[in-house]
Length: 101
Image (tube, rainbow, N blue to C red; front, side, top):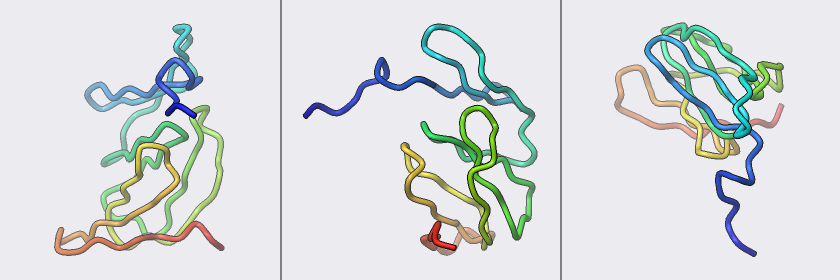
């Protein structure tokens, strides 16, 4: 089985200045928002977060809430949005975050 390419994904994301969003590869804009402090983007969704956020949420490319979790620094997502990490605020450590409740 081949690795899915961009043409197989319904959405692609963009980041431009202080804004980000998702659009379909057919050219339709699905979601756009202002970046709070920073944003972690993936193919399946995003985390838009303030400078220091104890609790943050993952939203899908339409901006719909998917789940929330306790954070310990700056969130990082893998390309697909399946793995979550938190970089400590002093940039001295990396912690894997479980989506399990």
